[in-house]
Amino acid sequence: MRISCSSTHNEMEGTMSGRNSWTETASAFAVGLGVGAALGILFAPRSGSDTRDLVVESAKASLDGAIVAGEALKERAQDSIDQMKGQVKKATEVGERAYREAKSSAS
Picture 1: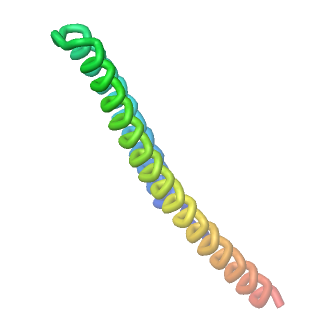
Picture 2: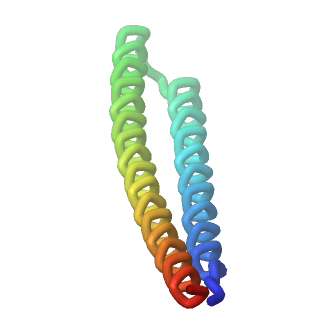
Picture 3: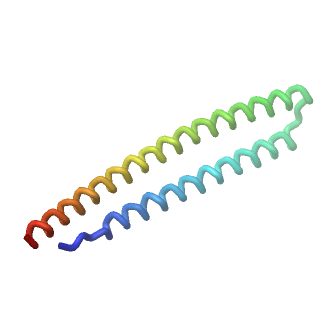
């Protein structure tokens, strides 16, 4: 009896590449947000207190966004872990069944 792991391997590659793509997108967004905020502050004609208020509000919004992104990443990681646990369980069951079948046919 032969067990094929190619579909599982392809699924894992798809999951990993999707995770890398999401991480790169989130990083690019954060960098863009920071650069945009810095340029806005540099070129906006505002008073010192208005600029400080803007910086504080921008920092709070960025922090809130980072928290939301972190929670989403945590959920995705947990989903991936749960999926891998299921795949390992299935592979273990198939292996045990193959072992029992081979043992009973050898008897």
